[in-house]
Length: 107
Image (tube, one colour):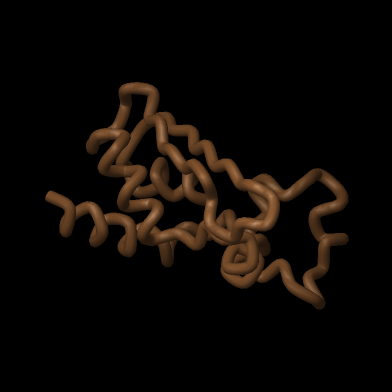
């Protein structure tokens, strides 16, 4: 969702995100955005903005992506989730403006 939002917002042509967790810790121990040199902002600025905008704790991700009880995982069992408009992580519209706003504040 994070990488897709960065690209959909036109903030980079390519991007990848890395996130690491430790057992028993809700907050990630590491988070990084790498635009492979194609970013409109520095990777550090994007990392900071994304960390402030996107839910990075597992429970918060479950809520944001509607993965709790009652989620119809069967909708993704055939052909995977990519391009499936029903999945919350494919819809970046709500996140684009939040990310752009966070970057504008950081300027």
